[in-house]
Length: 270
Picture 1 (cartoon, rainbow, N blue to C red):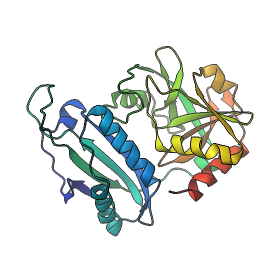
Picture 2: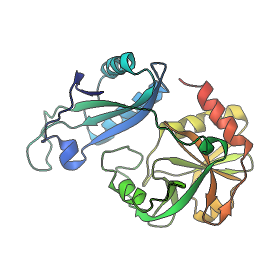
Picture 3: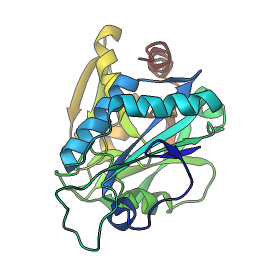
C-alpha cells in the first residue's frame, strides 16, 4: 500500500524535490499485530530530521492515521515513511511557502534465513568510503547513493552485510545497519557526528544497556577494534540484532549477549 498525503495512490508529481534532489528524509519501522514498534522514538527521529533540514514535519496524528490505514489491511509488515520538501520549480532555491509531502509505503516482512539469528552472518568490508558532512550526519536523508554503491560491490548471497568506513578509515556502520563492538562488559558504537545514520534501534540499545549491567561508549574505532572484539553486532529496526560470524579471516562464536539484546528489543517494543 502507498499513501501520498494520506491518499492511496501509486503516482507522484515528477517535480517532487525528493526525486529531483534527494530533498527529504525517511524512516523504516515494523508493524507487528498492527502496532508500530518503538513509534515514539521513530516519530521523534522523523521530527528531528525534518527540523535539521528545515522541512515541515508531518503531524504525529497524521502519520498515526496512515499507520492505522495500513494496519487494517496488513497488520504485520515493514513501513517506510518518507517526507519530501514537496514539488517545486527547477533550481536549488527553496520557496518560503514550500509544503512538504508525506509518502507512507508498506512492504512484506523480509524472509531472512533463520541462521542469521541462530548462527550470525558473514560480512565484508566495503571499498567505498563515506564522505564526512556534519550538516547531514545522523540524518536518514533521501540521498543514499553511498549505500547503493557500497551494496553493489558484492553479489555473494553468503554475505549479508557490508561494513562502511569513512575517508579516515574509521568504522561508521553497515550498508543498512548501525554497528556495536562488544568488549568485556561494554557496548562500543561509532561516533556519527560527521557521517552515518543514527538509527532508532541503536538508540534503543544504548538506552537499554544500563539496566542490563552494560556500559556504553561512543567513540572512534578502526577495523582493528572490530577484529579484536569479543563480538560485533549490527542492528536496525527490521532485522533487530544480528551478530557477525565472519569478517574476512576473523571468525566469532555466538556471544550470549546477542540473545540478551535481541530479547530486550522484543520485550521493550515501545
